[in-house]
Image (cartoon, rainbow over all chains, first blue to last red; front, side):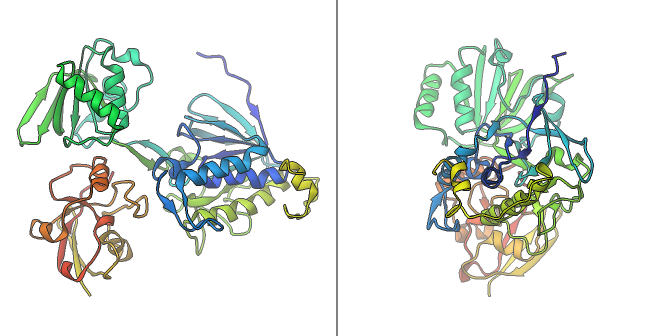
Amino acid sequence: MTEPTAPIQTDVVIVGAGPVGLFAVFELGLLDIKAHLVDILDRPGGQCAELYPEKPIYDIPGFPVVSGQGLVDNLMKQIEPFGPQFHFNEMVESLESIGTAERPRFRVKTDGGLTFECACVMIAAGGGSFQPKKPPVEGIEAYEGSSVFYAVRKKETFRGKKLLIVGGGDSALDWTLNLQPIAERITLLHRRDDFRAAPHSVNAMRELVATGKIDLRIGQLAGLEGADGGLTAVKAKLSDGSVETLDVNMMLPFFGLTMKLGPIANWGLNLHENLVPVDTEKFESNHPGIFAIGDINAYPGKLKLILSGFHEAALAAQKAHRYVYPDKRLLFQYTTSSTNLQRKLGVA
Amino acid sequence: MPKISFIDFKGTERTVDAQVGSTVMETALRNGVPGIDAECGGACSCATCHVYVDPAWQAAVGKPSAMEDDMLDFARDVQPNSRLSCQIKVTEALDGLIVRTPEKQG
């Protein structure tokens, strides 16, 4: 057992570091509210960074066109003065109320062992958390965590193993190259003889195939053999229709990511079709102090647009101020004219 | 107006009107046809609008682009007639198109 670390005390925990979660930092920051952000991905930006970093977005006000990554980079710059604290590769697992309706307070725990205590929670989780897609092969669950893994946490796990890596993107190729010296033997299986990964990785992989250091098969997964979580062979349907039994005892499938609502479903919130219903004044859920902004919320007329999420963040921040500073009156101010706000932004 | 038929994995067929210029994915969503998730909203970024084009229509629909083929790696049970329906534009020539939706997207 690891020693429990002291909870991180903060004003607001933002669940999700996509564009809307990032902009919430700005709106909260203007009101002197500090935020920590938790995201399952390893970098900020959510879907913009993970799904379409290079794709142009045409409906961000003031930007005739901006790429997904460009928008994220700009938001990161915009919120820098507020010193947001990021916790990547972490998923918020539980949310427990430790306050009252008038003075809400929450204890938030992540799967990585972090604990926060905060006055408000802003769920900006978009379509949910990104989780690895499982390949469509019968009975794979029985091997997960023992001989089938969707990510490499420790390279040593694969030392001396007969490893099957499935996929044709950067993850599949990078791990093929990285684990080749460690594993006893690597077989790479991909649906077609054409790889999406960076050209230099593809070339390096081809070199390993040419020199007989790894095996390459073109085909799809067809079945698993083994017992008690131990894989003994994998059947692959090759491009010519034949089925080959591959002698492997570990498998790393890289089939991309999918969005799942995940643990949010267990937080005692009203949910409607995997969305969090909110009011349109404060974007607060049925639980005082828990807000939902961006694609994860639902209300009459909701549009799943980034710009709607920005608006929702601004209004939710106003209500959050009442919880964080119950005794302070909130004065509405403009960044164009208020020296107070400009000082916070570091420009006055 | 062209008509498109969607046949789900159980064999249930739904035939709906499609607008020329829209996509097969949009046609499905607009008409409440189940079996197509379209998580990314049509940006060819997620492979959750995967369909099987009826063999009789494969030539008319055409082959996936390189970008779409890359994305198809993330779909389940990809066949030679697999396409992402967000990348199939409806034209008059596709009147009567038949596509099948897989048991599971993503």
